[in-house]
Image (tube, rainbow, N blue to C red; front, side, top):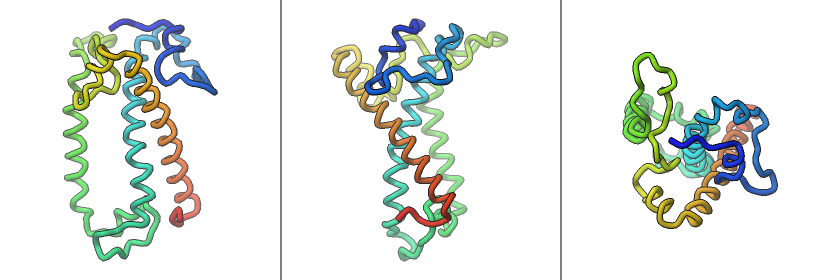
Length: 180
């Protein structure tokens, strides 16, 4: 996989006004970290997608309880404890783990025993965030400008969603009551 230079990283997808390139911790100053940039980008996209699902789900769950007679009236971070589904959660974790394993593990190069430089390295040509379902790598090759615009929007919306869900959880933890 091609290692991007600092200049290429500073003009990559997700770098937009008004902040431009934002790296307050200076992680991309170290040349050794530049090799990890594709991994960090992949991780940011994945966490953003999860947050984009979690943020509206967190709000909706406080108003809409179709199961259990709709009698759950606690903060969302505690709601799962108010249901008789505690024995169901291991199955949920197993299903999420199976999906994670099937979509993440194939994206990495095979680690070589005793060679730490092969750990957490994405396969060459990997398009960050492409799970193979919606043609991300195809769009990246056929219409790079459209793909760049789409991925920038996805990254920025994911960043907003990560901040939003952290704020919602923080508010409920601090106040001990529901959001609304």
